[in-house]
Image 1 (spheres, one colour):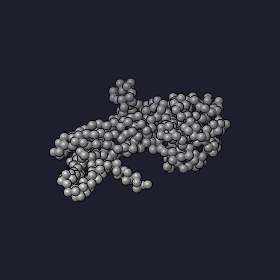
Image 2 (image 1 turned 180 degrees about the horizontal axis):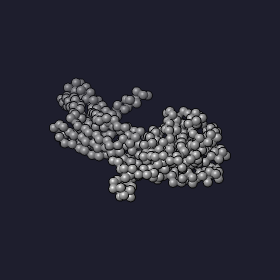
Image 3 (image 1 turned 90 degrees about the vertical axis):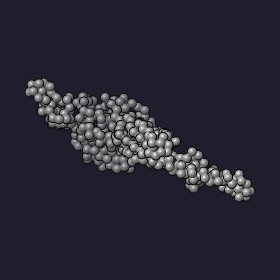
Image 4 (image 1 turned 45 degrees about the vertical axis):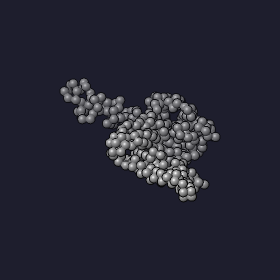
Length: 424
């Protein structure tokens, strides 16, 4: 079966050449058998055509100077990765037909273009690849194909290196998202200096090269006669831990409409939500292996989280219950853990129940697996979480995240409700 498939592939690739070779063999047989001059002349023509066509195709890709400039290594979903391609013909022979392709494993990104080049001429153009799905992709090397006018041979050459492009998930605004506060002792009173710009100004210092003009304190500058910049401070804040379930048996759906993709979108949006207000955020997940980012603040830390989420795959072999049992001691007494999962197994709910006993506050974003095509419903898990008074958000396929993560779907105690303003 495999041999027949290969033969069929070769026939489709060299169909014109095969027809000419069959015709050539037939012509020689008829010429030798009949001695008729017409068959001899036709055989001579076909015998000359094949090597000339091969040389034409071979020379069509020689003497080319190709430059590929790719400007982006990291982009977010919805953005474009631009590149400039320039092809020069350094010979005195024109190139009548060249097919240019920049192959990529990014969905919908590979594009082809047919060009012609005069002797000593060049072509240059810009290409913008629209990045529709997060992940790590390869682009290139640039492939140029050429052939002879009769279509008997087709040659292909590669130019330039292979380029890696990381596409980050795009965070969505969650204006009404809330998680139970850990109520850290002294939170909101004890402060420490930071290089980040926060709502809390601590004092002024001399302006230093690189400081933003928005940090200049103009009243003090006018009083002392030199540029003065504001300094800022951070309040002590409890840690936010995002636990993303990447167990393969918990994943349902495909491509953008999958629990894996929704889970990454939720994790990205929640991280952005808390980092925007200078809360320390950590990440924990088990895909191909354990991925751990200790809680931290700032844009660089958010970039690290985006990098991890861009490469996250729902291929893990460790169930969520085992992950919580194994790594639960990482969560401090004043931490808030947000679990994102589509698992319909109740074992992880029992593992999660032990965290509040250690002073850890817990919230869950439950992806309804049945809405993604699973046979089992999330109703039993949802009921188990409600019975334990664990704050739960339910997200279904097609839901707007800002709406779905704006109102909790399980029991919320009066104490938790009254504490919402303290977290904000």
